Image (tube, rainbow, N blue to C red; front, top):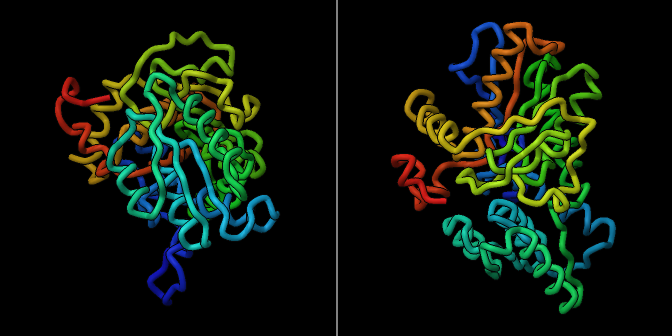
Length: 326
């Protein structure tokens, strides 16, 4: 819990209760709000699942005291798990595809984790296979597997969703969020639909990603620069629940890049491309609600800004589009 009113015993207590802030570029009659997850101690939304998954796995006996956590991750989940592992007396090993942010890998190592890189060409599927191979080689080792573990979704159902609804007095019309593992959107959406079955839910992916295929939409696979969301292999995205999602919006790298620069220059949000892509989609949904094209129980849209732009500066995200490295 983030608070200035009393001293806290552990950094784990600072996870969650992040600010919900209005985005001022949307339609006045349908406000867009963003959950600023960089306010977590590891500066991303993945701190939530890091703590939640490890505490539940220890409670259930799936992982013994002093054991090892092994996770395939692009970085933020590794940071969240590393923070939690260090405070819970666990070792951590992370399997990371080579192309992902060097800043994230340095932070995981600083938190005491071992980093193992896999070839970019093998994607997250290759990282997942390598993580399970390592777990088989070690005693008292588990792979939480954020792409398939229901605890990922449960963390956001138990924490993120209620925080959003408390802040808006339960008047949430639409939920729009990027999908990497899909745990964030699924958890918030499940909570939201329990509050009002008419809540509109939209997933966000980069152009070139295949999430739209879950809803029977045609997608042409391709490379993209947006990091942290999207999929090239829907078989690895076991948490996505099609019945909780009304639409999947594909956002181009160019639009995400323009928006992340606008968010910084105009609204003071230092966020990365997954957040800016979500913001593009959230503003579109807000305009559609305002125009009567989308039915929603309330005139409000909520999205999630997963992390900070500081983790991607080495990739030149604030330079010209052509200089932005994927």
